[in-house]
Length: 403
Image 1: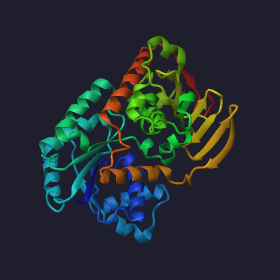
Image 2: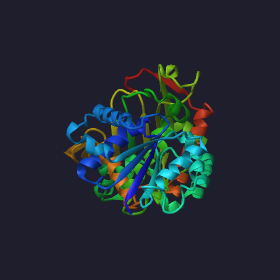
Image 3: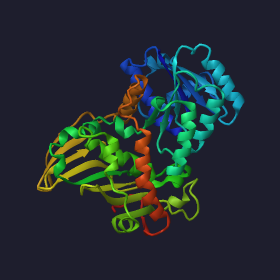
Image 4: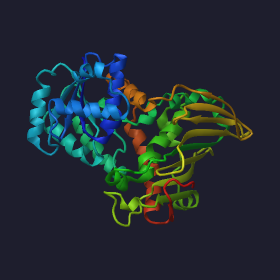
């Protein structure tokens, strides 16, 4: 059956910056043909109002084209919904059981994680999870292992595990998917570095960021999954994650640095006296002795997004998965030969488009399993407990300075 995307949070930041441009990319490639999107949000944007929102979203990323915009809008229908009102879900059910009764329904929760459970419970009690429904959710999956287990219980009451698509958009990056082909000698690996440094600050995401922090935002999911991809041809990502040793308190204290940029506490939504990190650097190890260094943060001096693998003979390779999208050989510790992997333009748009298309085709290879998330929380919970207990000093840095 034809997929129907029911996009919750259709007026939010994620939808505006990434999902709508990705859907437009699919439209330009012809892969949105015959497919429909029901955009669901709290705001009153019925009719042409939502078309204006679509136009604004595309214009911000330089994608608006008046000649085909009307045809693109023809794929959308807007539905105003109060997330906490059962009556709203009943009305949504009536809509979906009408002209969309023969579509395969994909419910995409592009909303803050603290309302996942409420939405899922209302969807379930309204009968919207019956039949062949699917659910797509974004990381982080819970705030810790305990809350993840609670989320899993609600998810299991809505749909089966085979119909759950947990998105980590790093797994939509073609250059990261290609990591295994660059590694001829996995048993000779000595160190792996996975980095995600950004010059942008937290901006208007203070309420989300303050309860998560830099490690929950990118370290305990994106960067761990990038590491797991290195070994994908030898073993699946889950087995790679299981190879990472749970660090002791002493190891965390001795191998980690965490910082917060000046002015962070003044951002709307950030609590007074917050000890949330906006930068981290920590070294873990695997059961077979590989050192794994993870680094990431906001408000830093330059964009650095890379995976670097060093062999025991000091050779290796360096993959820039950020704006440059390049691969380099390393000899004697220095970059030696570099080549562009692909056109880096729009790679964020293309990776979401790729994952959406794979979900529509029921291809779950690059979506996160519940067992993978359990391994992520095994590592993340141990690290964050030490940091939150103030066993590691939180240093201050100026936004844009080199650390």
